[in-house]
Length: 436
Image (tube, rainbow, N blue to C red; front, side):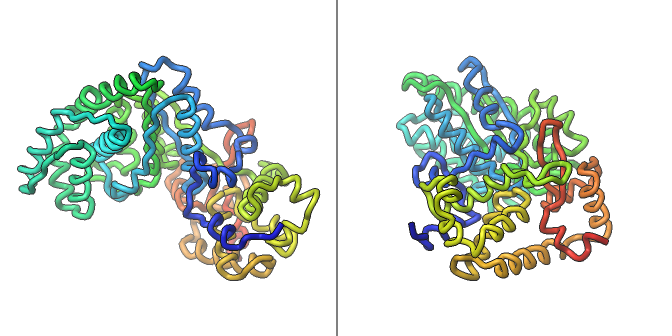
C-alpha cells in the first residue's frame, strides 16, 4: 500500500473536527475512552436516554481546548440520532463574540438553531412573543427589524446587526436584560414545547441541544465584577438551566478548578464532566504504553485509513516507515504531545508543511523546538516555579496562577483510578528554563 500524501495532509489538519456521522471522517476516529479514565460520552448519553422523555436534563462538559470535545460531542449526536432523538448541535463561536457573551445571547442562539433545525425538516413554529419583541427591538434600535416568515432568520438578523458593533450590542443588552425571564418563558412555551410535540408526531424520542465552544469564552471581567465564565455559568446559571429540553453546554475548564465549583454544581444540580488528556505516562512517571499506542494509531490511521494498527505493526513495518524515518520518530512526536490531540496534529502538520514523508527525526526535533520557543515566551519566572511544583507533585492548587497555567495549556489534567493528576506540557520540559 502506498501513502496518498494529499489525503494524509488534509486528514492531519489540526483545525478540522471529525464528524463521526460521516463515513469519510469515521474512518479516522479513535476511541480513547479506555485510557482516559472514564466513558464520559456514554455517561452524557445515558443521562438523556434513561430518563422519561418529558424530563429535561442539563449537563456540563469541559476539558482543555483541543482535547477532542467537539469530536466526542458529534459522536454523541450520531449515537442519539440512532435512538431517534432530534439533536441540534451548534458551535456558539460561529455567532457569538467570545470576548463578550451574555445569557440572552446564548438563549437567542439556542432559539435560532432549534428553529432552523426544525425548519429544515418542515416544522415551522412562529412564536407570537418574538413577533412583538423583534418589532420593539427595531423601534428601540431605530432599525427596521422584521421577523419575516422564519424565527431563525429574524434572530440571525439581530445577531448580524450586533456582533460587530459593541455599542449596538450594549444597547440591545440593556433592553433585553430585564426581559430575560420573558424570553426564556417564550422559548420554553412557544418554541420548545410545540417543537417536542411535533417531533413526537414524527416518531422522535425527544429534543437535545448541544451548545459547543462556550468553553472558549474569554476570562474577561464583566461590569458586574465577575469574570465572564463565572458570571455566565454561576451567577446566571439558573436561567441557562431552565430550558425545557435536554441541553449540554461546554464550559471553560477554569471553572472546575475555581472556588466557584460548588456554586456551579448547585446551580445545575450536576457535576461538570471533564474530558482529560490521553496519558503517555503514569502518575509515577512510568511509560503508559496503551496511551502512546493509541496516539500512534491516530496518526497512522490518517495515513492509511482502513488498515488496522495490528497490520501496520505486525505485518508491514513498511507502512510506518513510509510516514516516519523510524518507529522511534513516531514514538517521539506522540510522547511530546502530552496526549493533547490537537497539539499532536499541530506538530504533525507542521512537519508535513516542511517536508514530504518519511518525516525525519531532525524535522520533528526542529518543530518541537519551535513550539517550545513559542510557549516559553509567555512564561514568567514565577510561573516557571509553579510549573516545577506541578511537575514534582503532580497536583494543582486552586490559586489564580494555576488557573492561568491550565488556561494557557502549560499544564494538562489526566485521570486514573485514584482521580485527577497533573503534569506540565512535555514540550516545556525541553526548555532550558525548566530544570533550573
